[in-house]
Image (cartoon, rainbow, N blue to C red; front, side, top):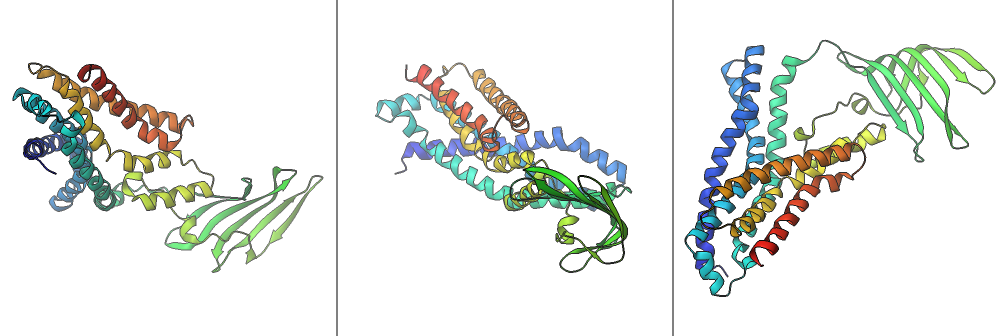
Length: 364
């Protein structure tokens, strides 16, 4: 049941949240994106329309980061105002507990967290992709990157690896491919055949090599033979996967990022960074709920005359979160932490600290 106090608290919280969201978004935009945007527009001489679109497409990601900070400010300010008005003292005298007092803040923050997850999936990722489509054709290098593809067996041993150069405008053709095949003897993987060719063509179900030389490596000798046009390889990976390029995590939805992780793992590439970013796609939106609870609990422990303490708590909490997130990410990339633990540990640590503070300062 929503009481009159709940409506008053939600009104004060919402007004501060909207104002904070607007101000923080503008500050973050100016501090993190504006200089880069000006440099990009100047370097590539963008006309007005693509320049404005590029700036517009960068804004949703800024809002995603501003929402948790705004929820923290809203909790600190609204609860402090109620403290100054002695409203908290009054409702506690009526028998309401602290968890019941902050319940409206918890629910609205939870709603915003869920909304942020949806916005990240269907708003932020597509807008980042759109921004990339504007800048990529301008910054594309003339150098064509080589193709490196690896396949692994079920026991984790390498099955084969392909090194080749893409052929411009011909996705079904590879230039100067080198196919290295491996065999397992006594659980020890070794190279048993190397095939180098002038080109490779996709035949609908496999890659065929043309005009090359093949080395079959035996324990006692190496057998060399020439191959002609159409030598069938064991490589059955279609061209779209061979030519697949990695996208930045912020440009992908969670499902697309999972697919990229699977492709990386199938080819033996490092994927812990993407695994970490996948879990951050969920932990970061829930920072809205974490920050709202922290702000509410912390503000209750301050004296009514210590208004500057709210500012210190807000800035300190935000700095602590991103420092912890950076440290956790480093631990994840080094293999010390599981990606899911690394992504959620800042939220859990800060919540734990705020509950301890509540137990010591408020309930004592």
